[in-house]
Image 1 (cartoon, rainbow, N blue to C red):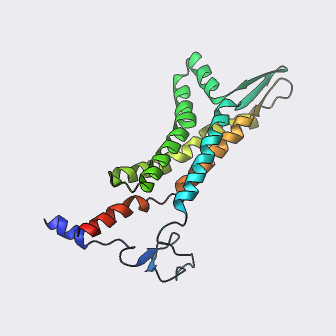
Image 2: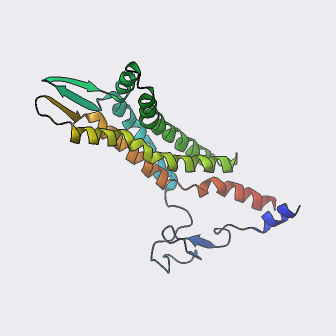
Image 3: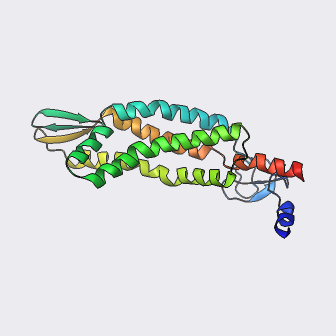
Length: 214
């Protein structure tokens, strides 16, 4: 009973007529258009969060297919060129017995970007439908996308290092394929989608229903 009474007294900044600055986190009255400390524009919620995140996710999903179908690298050895996609690289490492490397590349380069798109898509749909289902777990899913998003650049990092190190002219060289550009675009766009999504939207419907119930 005491916990319920305490929760009924707790207000969000938006309910109290305040807005938090996204830069310095200072709480200011919503009547202010700019933060009095750093001058950043004040918004109780990120403007156009749903539409911007939706557009970025659609773009990432479209680019995901050429990123995995086009060659990531082209290895030239004694005049003979061999191109490999991300998946063919995973298969190569599996066939040569390098299971840890194959699993790492599969998770970081194939599974993680797809999971990020799927999780952010689910969060967008749940917010649009005004869902109140397990907001804590949905917030944790959002934090997970932010945490693992940067690790998707592992494949691009490896390609960059190989291109810089293996350059022996006509004997052997490694060149970045078109798939690397599409893959880098997918990673950057999904990271931007996670940044434009406002997780506070997950809690708005819950707070509204609690206020109506009170």
